Every structure is written in C-alpha cells, then in structure tokens.
Image (cartoon, helix red, strand yellow):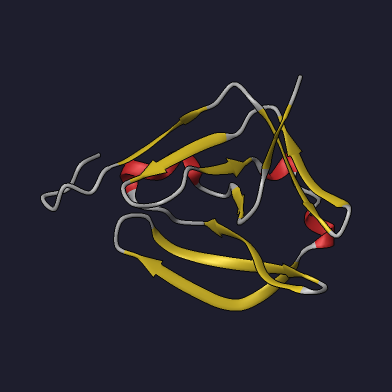
Length: 111
C-alpha cells in the first residue's frame, strides 16, 4: 500500500525462523512470521500467537495509534516495559498482522 505521501507498507510471509529472547529466556520462536516493511522503519516480524509464550507476558496499559496500521496494545516482561505489541483491529491493508505479536528485538535463527 502506498499513500499520497509516498508512505509504503507491505506485509507478507517470510521463509525464516525468528526468535525473541529477553534475559536468556525464549519468549517466542516462529518458522512462519509475517514481515512488515514500512517506509522509514526497520523491517518488523509479526509472530502468530501460537508461537509466543503469552503466559510470560503481562498486559500493559500502553496504547499507541499509527495512522497507517491502527491502534496497538502492548505487553511487558519483568525488567522490560512494553517489550511487545499487537494490533487487534488493524487497518484493512495490513489485516494479516491481526493478533500477531511483534517484539522490538528478534533474531533470525539459522535452520
């Protein structure tokens, strides 16, 4: 999707294995992430909830609004406030990320 301002967002499956780790603890690992590429932002991996250890996450009161993606909710772990976010009702052109979790830091894992 490209807006009148030249802002582009694409979302699609990525054939990689990614992992989110905090303080040595694996919080998520997925072989089926979606990658979101957005003008002016780093690529972000959105992981299906089945691949996230949601029991380790605590909902945060933080909410943000993106004019291109919608409203995001955040989760924390001890020592890392608002470490992960998700769009529960994203804009139509990024609907694929609905309910997926995105961590600030993920690593691509070989194999």
